[in-house]
Structure formats: structure tokens, C-alpha cells
Image (cartoon, rainbow, N blue to C red; front, side):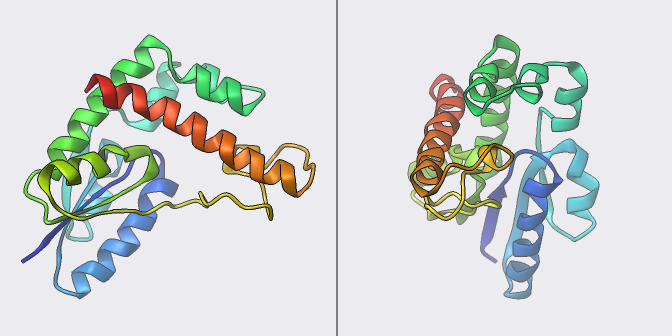
Length: 181
């Protein structure tokens, strides 16, 4: 039976879409493994999926105060730069290690944008990978990027620019731990 490993990071809102996809894959006869933070282990296993643990539970990170600067950032650029502190980088490197480990033995990898290592692990293992984003990532003039939703709106050119800024910031955050892993 073919094993599909799905890599997700973040909150329940980041994880639950992968659960829905996993249910459909199971119906089609695939074995499904989902890598997510430990807060979601019981949730994932209750649907009969294999679970792969990620160190760095988002709720625990928030409680620890390590993400306070990100949570309290008054603009998206400060949000991204605040995630590059030493404590957060250490946690993100551990998560990269866990995500890579979860890919072992997979026949294909489906990954969240925050788990970009899925792309590289699939290349290394010579298996297919699919980016599955639970939020819009394609640059568009119709609406701003995720981190800009609650900001003043300045029109179509601004909207498209926010997507470019989001892509740049997101890659800056995940590329450091990827390179160090």
C-alpha cells in the first residue's frame, strides 16, 4: 500500500485541511502519515492516520513567550524578523529534523508551505512532492496576502506587492533552519 506523508506545521487551522485530504486518500486506498505538533497526536490518530511527532508545539511556543515579538508585531516585516531569534531558530531546526524523519519510507510527500523541507526531502528520496497550502499563496491583485488582511487596503498594486513581501518573508524564515539542518 502506497504511503503518503503529509507535513504540516502550525495551528489546528494549518493541520485540519490535511486531515480532510488524508480522509480522501484513505478512501482511495492509501496509507497516510501526518507530521504535526504533539498537540494534534490524538486528533490525528483518532482518524486512523499514522502520526509523526514534531517538537515545537505552537501553543507551548506561544505560552513560553518565545513568539511574543511575532504576536505583538505591528507590521508584517517585524513579524518575520521577530521569528529569527536564537530560541525560535533552535526550535525550527528541531522541527526540520522531525519533518525530514517523517518522510522516511514515504512514496510521496504533501507539504504545508511552512514545511518546505518536504520539497527537498522528496528530491533527495526521488519521490513526488506536492505543496498544499491551507491559505492563498498565489500573488493576486484581488486581495492582500495573509499577514496584510487586517491592514488598510490601498488597491490592486498594493495587494500584489503584499504577496511578494509575504513570499520573501516566509522564505527568509524557513530557509535559515533548512540551511542549518
